Length: 424
Image 1: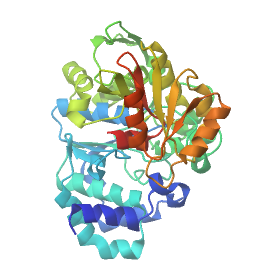
Image 2 (image 1 turned 90 degrees about the vertical axis):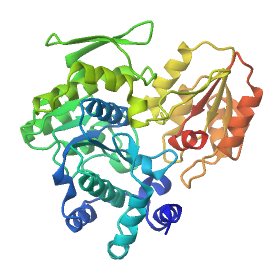
Image 3 (image 1 turned 120 degrees about the vertical axis):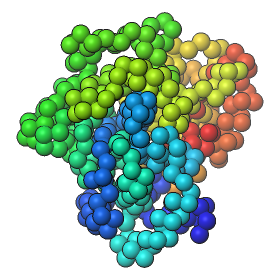
Image 4 (image 1 turned 45 degrees about the vertical axis):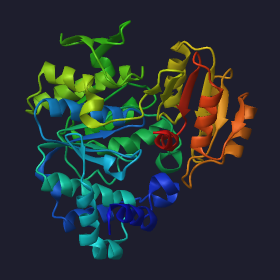
């Protein structure tokens, strides 16, 4: 098989959560452990950092990887989902896994996969771990796919465990309260391994404290340790309770919500320094300032055009889109054109209720099975006071927004990672 045929086989033959939803979720690590044994435990051959959370884990993972690259470490990065190319999930020093490696991995192990029937995610985690071991990375940043306790990545013993925050998402799988969701995320906390929590929240912080205590794992909340202020030029001033400070820290990611992620990154770096990694201030500054260039991260308040000002963002749940709406309100424009599509297993009504009513909406459907029909989405939106027109595809919706917008307007594209992926 060539690379495209291999990807088609992957997507067609194996259940994949982002396409099929709950049907692809495996409530145990049995297959992961069998894959790990088959490939002779590759994750034991390099150091790791484990990153979980509802929002922000992708940005935090990429910033940590960028900092480690700047520090001279050969750095693996495993994230999900991808936007355009499957290989975005598996990178070393910002370079995607070669097509030849992907096809070879599938061809050489196809009989084993046929007997085991692993999920898409189980198999791609195994691929990532083997690739990092084969290429002898020094350290790898491993982003949790879903939850934590039963996630396929949760066989590693990291230098540091990081949990960015907790919000309502994937409730059918992780639980219908913040406490239950936190319990699933806390599953990445390991005995004696330091853990960094991004934000303290009385609704769930006791869950992390209890799990860390039972594991004798040192625990810090980044929001307790750091104070952060954004300057008029977009840079950040940060101070740590120990006296460490960063002035005019520049972040290449322009979403205002990065003010929550940057302290998490810095607290994680302190933990990694305590573990023996040689990371200096210049590495931190350059890593955060060059995160897109170093790692290829896309879709976080990403500017697509200046005239009219056009931005896309992968925020897709109530907390993520609350941040997006706040930043939209800080922008200057004559009129807002909002291209939106959502998946059908999200709390769509809660999201629609917080969106700006004065905008013109372009309701569309991403080309995945989980995507909500654009007519259904428009109907729910009308009941929340939002007005607009339906389009069967993302490209048609975006084209209509560009046709209708004048230079002084703004176009925003989002609501789902898959909508952003199609625009990019």
